[in-house]
Length: 460
Image 1: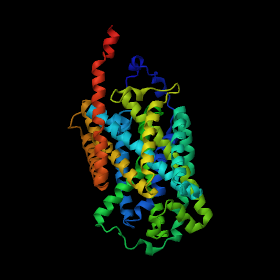
Image 2: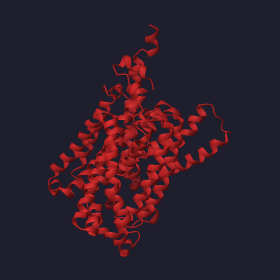
Image 3: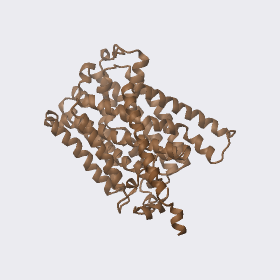
């Protein structure tokens, strides 16, 4: 990162902020777990109900793929501690243009993910306060209020945002543990048959559910993004990533199995708050209320984590001069306020455009779009370590590169398979959004070509 170029672009000097090491292992693990365990596990049972119990196979395969990607990001974090996560690794391995496309796609995933989480937040808020669901304007207002309240929190600083993340992570996990551990006593075996009710082949159904369930793992790379604010990032980030993914995988599969086993598929598919309905079926109204409250806290925490990342990714890209300079301007507390505001304006627009649909339908489309936008960066990052090490002078004959290549190939194949499972419409719109960034990159380069270089200014 070139913090010195800030002097000529009007940006505040951020080097001192990036070196502060505000985030330790607990905060980073909370960021990973908090960003993953959110709207996905709380609302996905409704999206998966149309497939039947075959969705559990999708969860297992997705969990295996997520663990591979966690290992990939853990290794990349040891190579470089630069902020930006997938963008930073792709740029170092493949160059500026590839770095820009990945930053663009990853940024799309983050602000569209924010929109999806806000929709899920409203779904569970409706369970607690029914009038929110009875009037679409109330629901829309609640979604937008949550987005902008957390945008303001993140503008205040990283420490404030990380405190919110730790607290909400603890509170969200408790109701999920209760369902995942004790819900097995209420299972109805008949709800697991037939295994596949989608009308598709088993392979197609598993591929489709794998794409949906990957939404619940988006954010597994979260600890890599604010690397400049992490204490001993080369050690802390890999540990936090692996711990977070393994914990989430066990919880996801257990909770989904209970949801499918407790409620009939037709009832589960129509629920705007599926786990609250599951808890109410097992433990009565109070159980449903407690789980709904946990879901509201959970989605709120996830929204906070995604909001943090939606500012950090374009900020890191702007410091490298592959995003417009406006994204690199920071406040006195070192937070990229412009990046946060622009990202969440786009999230708000997406919420407004999709809120007229049913909650489950809107949620399903947005999460698939966010997932597809994330899978392209994941595919690049899967093979980025080889490129980085080769660019640093290592030889193909180095035995360690063989293992790295095998791990990267697994991650790359998994990413391609998950893109296939996203469906034609989602891939089409995701591809258009990705290509829409190319003119932006050209404009940035044209503007830079008209400006004297920083080195020339120094020589004058």
